[in-house]
Amino acid sequence: MRVMRIEEVMKRTGLARASIYKYALNQTFPQQVQLGRGGAVGWLEQEINAWVQEQIDRSRGKTANT
Image (cartoon, rainbow, N blue to C red; front, top):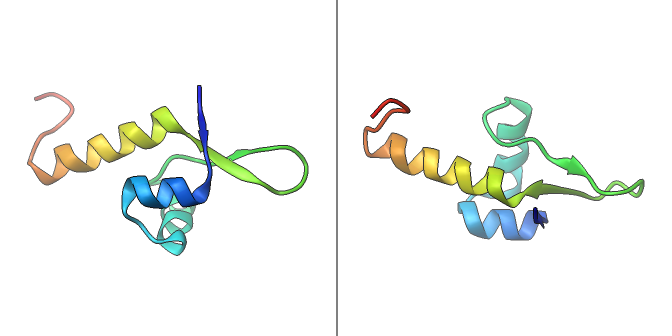
């Protein structure tokens, strides 16, 4: 299991920082995980990869059942 920081998530998804946090608040993006007590957060790499794949599938008209 690998944790990605915001800069890497931005590169992987092509989203701006504000968009990532907006989608997370709307629960349309993987939820962040707290890294210690200092306020640092990250995202699980496999969840980000799955989200990116969902966006690709959706843009190509695929659904979970196809």
